[in-house]
Length: 143
Image (cartoon, rainbow, N blue to C red; front, top):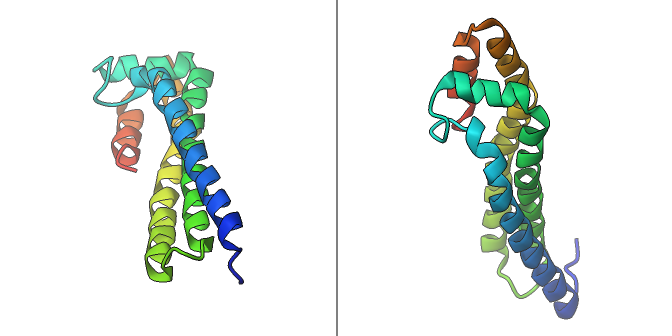
């Protein structure tokens, strides 16, 4: 693959970095939507967190969406570095591979939270059986 000219690559890199900053700022604002359902945040009790997810699944999904977009913006910025001719190849490759390695488990964890996690939270909230949701939460939170 040939690398683009200096002005084109610089413009792509600049745009990718600006996009990353803007999307990350939106994600930080959207975190307010996530706090009631995150372990270690408010509410501290499992029933409260599961109840929030069960009763507000679309707020939960909406809160994660900007974080999913930050992952895309991070990969885009890493690709832009790789394609920029004045950036050394080895460091650019390390950034690209490291970014992909970080994004994969993160995105799998987020996908699980907005699918399986919501199902388990709804079941726990409905039946009062919180053990499956607690196990899920403990397993997926580190991702």
